Length: 249
Image (cartoon, rainbow, N blue to C red; front, side, top):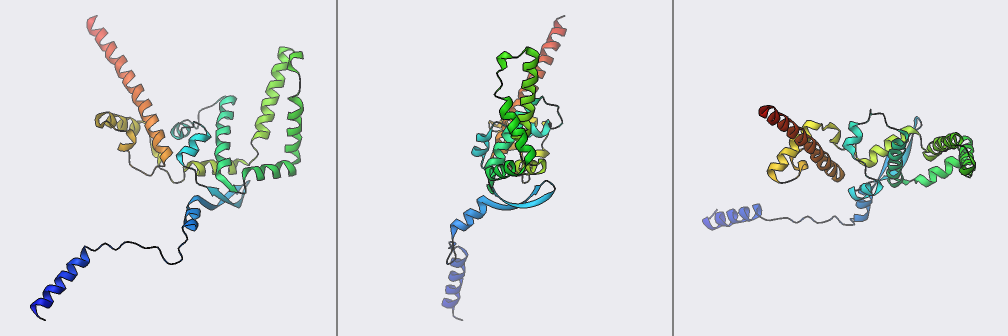
């Protein structure tokens, strides 16, 4: 091999190392199929002890916010906290909106229509609710009015959430992305530390927490971390004021 051949071979090797091979789509590539596969997923969903295949939609942070102001960290942290009926109904309404927007095939409306058509007990209570809501409450005593309103509340709760509990819980969790998120692993100490670091770095608490999080998770991390930091600073100020007062005494 001549010197020129060796030089040409070295140049070719060097050029190959720095050549950028732009990726090209394969012949017949259909991007809509890939997009559809990323947005809609067929999942086995529990349904009253059995399982059914449902096509579910992936919700982004904006769509989740449109369903209602629910903070995932707070919901997880306070899951054992006893709540009054109005709070329960508020949370259930938000969950139902998430479930409605998550179910693509069958839709929530299709399941709801089928259940009210086939479930005689549910249909009976729905009819009872329609009738009792027509009562003129101005003709009732305070005691009777309270009793009627409580009965209406119970009927609305019974007929308002038609899906089985295991279905409702699964779809809510799936829609919120709890199955792919590390947000449940966070605690107040981690959030406080992240907020302190954010004050020093002039950025966001979520910038100082590692893990797998959705866009909505990062919004919640920032909200909760700043709230915890605010409480922490307030307690520190109370301690400083008490210490200074004791020194002056």
